[in-house]
Amino acid sequence: MFQSSGSAERTLKFQRKRLRAVLTLGGQMKKEIRFGVIGAGFMGKAYAIALNSVSAVFSLPARAVPEMIATTSGAAAALKAEAFGFRRSTGDWRQLVADPDVDVVGICSPTFLHKE
Image (cartoon, rainbow, N blue to C red; front, side, top):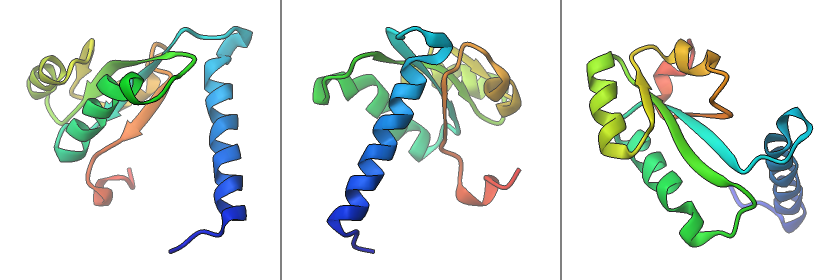
């Protein structure tokens, strides 16, 4: 659906406000934003590629860091972490979501799995 320019402006303002909130967690400006990704299939890989190259496209006040990836098994997650450039991995998405070293979580699993 086409967004009017007013709607697009509101969306952009909202996104900037969210980014500022993440960058100032704990009251101090962060130098990096640590991302967690749930799902290591097509969308997980696309998200990882974007995280690893975002600084080449945008000038950001903080560096995007691929921190942790979660998929259905620990062994598969470890392989994907190495292949996609993540620091850590897990076979349990709940561990990723609860991890205090993950600032932002991207849900890249198939849509029908988002319910849980």
